[in-house]
Amino acid sequence: MNIGEWLDLAMFAALCAFGLLGFPISFTLAGIALIFGLIGMAAGVFDADFLGVFPHRIFGVMTNEVLMAVPLFIFMGVMLERSKVAEELLDTMGQLFGRLRGGLGISVSVVGALLAASTGIVGATVVTMGLLSLPTMLRRGYDPRLACGTIAAAGTLGQIIPPSIVLVVLGDQISNAHQEAQRQLGNFSPEPVSVGDLFAGALIPGLVLVGLYIVYQIGVAIVKPSSSPAIPLDNSMQAGNMASRVMHALVAPFVLIVSVLGSILGGLATPTEAAGVGAVGATLLAGHRLAAGRPLPVYTAVVSLVGVIILTTFVDMRVARAVIPTGELIATVFAVLMCLGIGWGLLVALARTFHDNTLVPVMRTTARLSAMIFAIIVGAQLFSLVFRGLGGDDAVHQVLTEIPGGALGAMFVVMALMFVMGFFLETTEILFIVVPIVGPPLLKLGFDPAWLGIMIAVNLQTSFLTPPFGYALFYLRSVAPPEVTTIQIYRGVIPFVIIQLLMLVVLALFPSMATWLPKALWG
Image 1 (cartoon, rainbow, N blue to C red):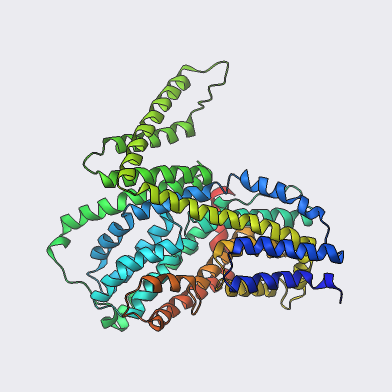
Image 2 (image 1 turned 60 degrees about the horizontal axis):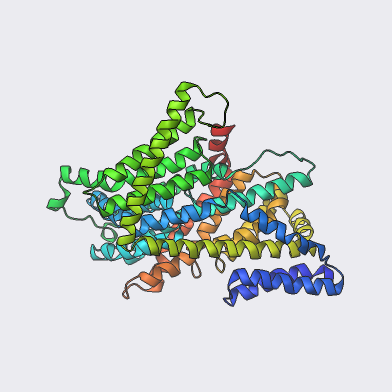
């Protein structure tokens, strides 16, 4: 066996080894690629022309409109988290459902779904819910194992419930893999796969998963009532007072979620445009929460924003035309006035968040997380170029086609590999490393790209929960009270891991759960 036959395998093994040692993955990807590229050139098995493509790859990333949604969604999520929206949601929903046995657990699952749809950042959601909910659940007599499992599972819903940052990144990677697979099959004009397809495909599995969590908590409350007692009534839970609190806590975030997700699924906006609306909406919501007694600027901006969306949807407002009908000219003038209203409200909201010391930390967190993701993208692009130059993609395709069981066997092996890698690497790292390598061979075997993407997302979500290395467990351990042991956290998440695995099996048996809605919406 010559060096060229095992160099690609050694390259992947070196990546796993250095990843386990804790080196920053973006620098690890680029460094290993350069080292093995030089070794390959010295051995005469790697063409240096592959590296000439690297600048074009980076330019393609910089001009990728889909990836522009990533920092916007991060800003939206961090702003909602820092503006105490999550805290109010958890407190209000806990009081609403707390009168039932298992009610606090149900409220955590519901709020986890809402936060997942508004933030999409798993670590932030788990930490926030751990800080706010876990002490309350323990104080109310909840079994520590059930409380920890519920919070960790609900916090990982940001992986699968749209609009999710993971789905944005995964949609871009699946789209690239689908196009490459089709080109290799001789189809040079394939049907496109978009982030919207993955958003639509993930909606039903995500909601079913939330329902399964709630069913489990109800079952535990029935079988073992002492593990999840009800909260006694007090004066703050009177019907009229409770209804107003629920409306105040729930309506604004719900409208924001529906606006962002609905505009994508309804075909009114691209994910990037919807992310921009979400970032503006989160800023306005934060500004309103900080000065609820002075709502006029925010209300003006919200009404103007809705008006602009409606006008741009139904009226042609292009001004670079020789003849503009009077009605469209009037609509254009109204749109300009509404843009001024949006600008006024947004400036007021930004000023309020700045003086409250919210805006600067939000922007710093957004910049840090965005830089981390795009640094990984740069490293992954170089890694994939060298890996393919060493013949790694051909080797992967050959291995997958020779696995016993055909396409299903290959799918099982890839899912198992990603599941194990999820113990050691972040989701974005896996998506940029593994999907470009295994995606085209799997899609050439005939799998639906939207279904494959949702299977990967649910699989990585399960990996996030699984002891002993699941990331969500470490996030929760970092904020859990000292009396909560690591073993209690591990034992608490096991039933939810089983639910996740059940969801994977159901998705594998019934792919229409992920493919029906995209086809119903767009054909």
